[in-house]
Image 1 (tube, rainbow, N blue to C red):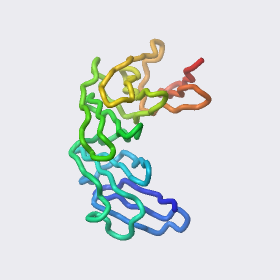
Image 2: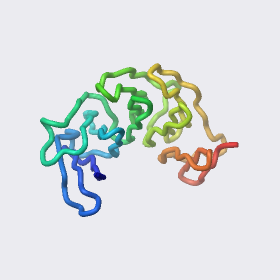
Image 3: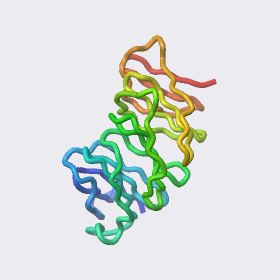
Image 4: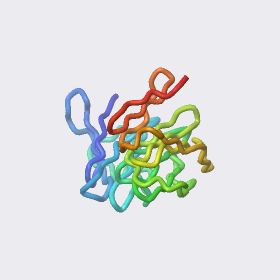
Length: 192
């Protein structure tokens, strides 16, 4: 059955999307201010967030308080703005202000890498998008970072729009074999 999961302050909550009734909840991100959306893969919900930065994995399908029964792992790594992406057994995200790329083993929560992006990106409010074995995330003012979607850190490129100095907060979207990117003043379709 389908579940709608909300990454809310201090807890994850799952609802029946047809009836709006709560199904399960657990202790989540320990903060009253949480921005990232939860993502799922193979019946597991992954969430990050909080100013302290936390990541959590919870097996879906429970009922009531599942903090003791369904939480698979919890680690002190995260980002409080961008959402993670699941790709080939790993979770990836870029920290919004520290300029760090993270990769966790999605099954265990073990940190695979934690690497500083160079050149420094400044703020990254976009979430990471995974396509064609590449991770894309756009900083507000310093371009789009492209990292290999593999458990070894490899920065492939940093791309800037030379004629658009405006801010970018939106995530890269894939449509019709093109990367769609939105700045504060323009929308770009990048592809062949």
